[in-house]
Length: 559
Image (cartoon, rainbow, N blue to C red):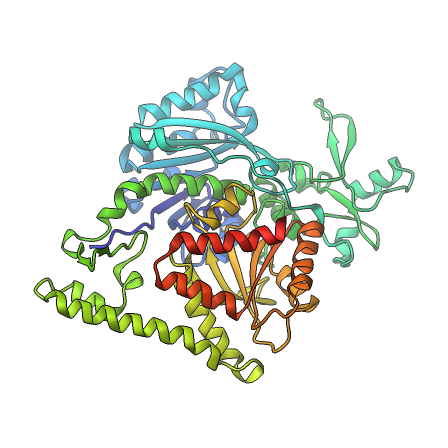
């Protein structure tokens, strides 16, 4: 029997779907969501077509009509919590929604929860509001941790957004094991989100806030700086803030257009576009339906969760629930634990069909077969692997064998990286189909080189991009520029360019270093000789040898 590591998630008060997006990218399965806002539902359905969305008031939905799930997530309204205490909450429409969460937790009893609230929740009413929330969650059977995280420090997004995150577990061990993510170095810049050289729709170059800014600055507005109109606490006086390196926090007042951040591009002074606002939340590939007006969309963008921050939390939470160190040995039925030539078959985080050749899988499922038959299959598998190594030399550089080379690299890289990376995808369309990635992996590595990329070197790489070039010449600037164009805040900043040969290693490394120094992005170049070395290490089951090989290649770039 193989245990599934896909945890089922229910998203309450889903809005644009920032939390759903983050948990999907962390490998969870969103099975059910709820939202009352009609147009938010249209937006959510456009982006999560496979998720069942219950449109309407959560108070009208019976718990038995919600499927069983493992994790509850939600961004609950907390701005209306009364300083008078719990009794006043119950009289307030928005505050009362928190107790709908409690109602469902008591009945459905999911293993874990993640709730998002405003930063001020921690200090509201001298901490009494958070105390009551914590007590209610504890009363529902959950052990609680909370933290305030900034998108710049924990999401690698140049957006000064802080939110309170509340995580809870039913099991003591899960509570003890869970840790909020560590800070990451922010490598993304405003230029990664805002293109000053691209003219936008005419509607973005007009507005009351633009007129106020121009008047206050005497028409002297600096290019590339983000400005934002704000109100004083009494809401009678207006003032302007400006930032060079990041976007000020998007607020709910953004829907009034006066609070939309402003920037001067190469053409004129304009408002940030809707796509740019969603990108500052880490939701870069959102699909926006035409039937929703901008007034509503800006509000949804401001209220959207920071996808990259929540994804980091979600990955830690999923890892704890997986409890992989204990479950690895239990993912396969005990009847399948066999020993072949003193080398134990290991299939961590994979199904049997993914980890073992079909011919060997057939034998493992038949407990009465003798070991001599098993040894025969192992010999055939070894011969097959040897053939894979020799096949590369049979593929001719050039357009005629380009597809064959692409297919070959996909198969081989999937084998080599099977212990580190997951969910390989071929020819993945990005940027609404305008670009394509040859091969894309999820980087869920818990140790080794790809883990060290994230945690030791703080390289933002939730996914690993592989580009294949079956050229007779070595890669030049266009190939590097093409791979750079695939990097974004959802995919990451690390890619591997695979070519046929490297005649001038010094020139290739110089290009890799230019990308690193100029953009804080990372490109590793591998050729036929490298692929053959990695394949042989894989055939010898030398996982640490593969890691050391990749470490040495990375050192050549950064040192």
